[in-house]
Image 1 (tube, rainbow, N blue to C red):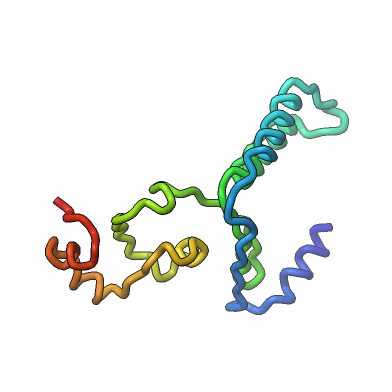
Image 2: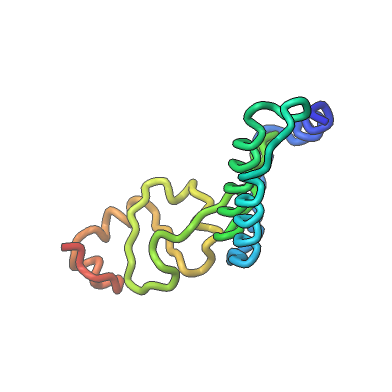
Length: 145
């Protein structure tokens, strides 16, 4: 199986990138089902003749990751031969007006693209010009101090 996956990954040239949203809203019902499954398997005894000693821990870790993926929005990313499933959650409630986030990595952080129209990413020179309170107020944001 590993050989097959390695061959599939090599079909993509370095620099061949793709980012695709998987879902914008989580699925709390499914997340709860995964949590229940994890709890049920927590008391299961894994036969050491068939499973590695840390199998219970590995299963729990994977199910916790799946639960997080289902609770929030998720996206698939391929960069060359590397494939990842990613999840993120809003720190600031979605739709809250007048929020200003200063993030120097915003141009290369694909999460902002996936948030859709509720986000404006300004160029660094433009951002430097709006850091004064008066300029921020003109843009419709409350004063910083």
